Length: 94
Image 1: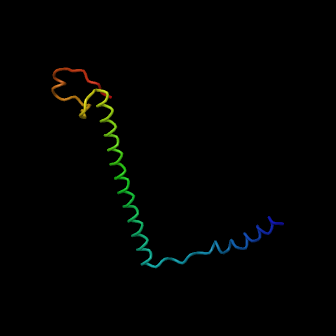
Image 2: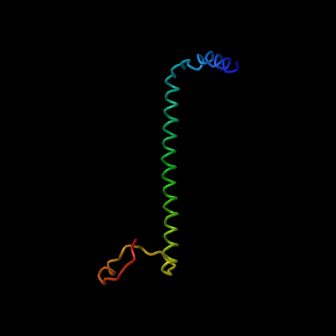
Image 3: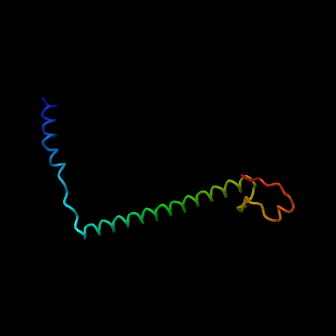
């Protein structure tokens, strides 16, 4: 009995849910477009800041990893310099 009454209530109220909303006025449409543009810009700025933070963390990790592995306190570029290429030193590159 409970299932049937729940079904009837659901069917009777479903008409209210299917009602159409009125079309927005030009001012409302412009305000919605502005809010959409602000949100998109904020998302892009947030993604850029996240990228900067990830690069900073990766650089700190690389600096600590390579300085402890080679016993150096300064960061060292993994790319060979022109002097090292001329002399022919072996480099550890990953």
